[in-house]
Length: 217
Image (cartoon, rainbow, N blue to C red; front, side, top):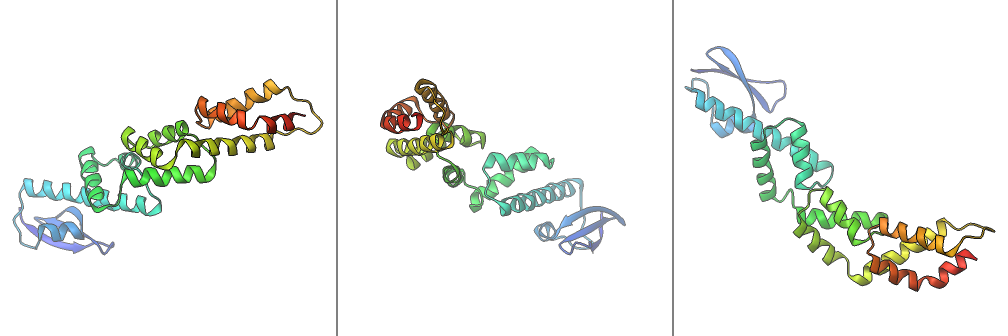
């Protein structure tokens, strides 16, 4: 089989490849250079298949970089995005390795950035942070390391106290008598949903005891 013509496509970085007079491939400029293709080259089925595979890799890489340009992603998120675009799993794996080696994806950095993002929006405990990071596909090791670096027990107590104060302020009812036990139950449930441990909740409830009574009166 003879490469009979190389013609630039309307996308200036892509080229149509003609073999024995028939348009067979459309490839990226990077692939053209990679294989050093020239008119008159002899191609066999193996070379053509390698060109196809390299073309899919370049397309997947470009799509991945475009996705990352919009915002930081975890490896799992990026894999899922590329899978939706129907790239072959082997190609996706190679793209992930390439991007990891280039520093474009880094689950350790992502985990810390995402944790800071969550905490900038609302007070959250370690359990909630763990759930959120696991949903992003972050490994247990990275998740634990990130939370340990980001939150000490004292930090978590302070966040829980802030969350409790926000809850009390929001649910303050003027001229309405609220049973203290019910108020505590509601506050406890709220803090638990925010991912705070029972030990943290207990300590915060004790420290806020006087504040809670003032809200109830």
